[in-house]
Amino acid sequence: MTMTASWISKKPDRCGGDACIRETRIPVWVLVNYRRLGASDADVLRAYPGLTPADLEAAWEYAAANLAEIDRAIRENEEGAAGFVE
Image 1 (spheres, helix red, strand yellow):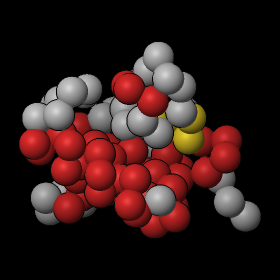
Image 2 (tube, rainbow, N blue to C red; image 1 turned 90 degrees about the vertical axis):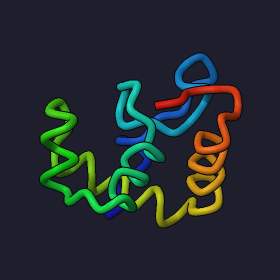
Image 3 (cartoon, rainbow, N blue to C red; image 1 turned 90 degrees about the horizontal axis):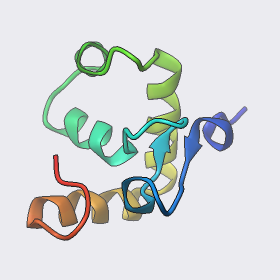
Image 4 (tube, one colour; image 1 turned 120 degrees about the vertical axis):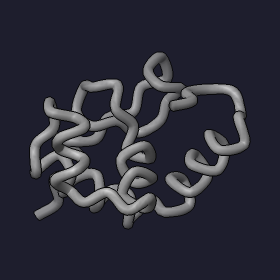
């Protein structure tokens, strides 16, 4: 059963319309990039104490289904494109 529909939200007035966890301002691409840089799920949960293991599961599921979108957001952030820069 997919949780993505209920756990991931996209709103044009929040984080530039990027996919975020629930109604937070935590974009999925930020979590994915953190993981790509070597963070474990436990590391991510320590860094974002408001998130749950279910949130991460939904983020990884969304990212796997929307890889091009996530890669683009990470690339734009690294290049300093307009929008959210961590």
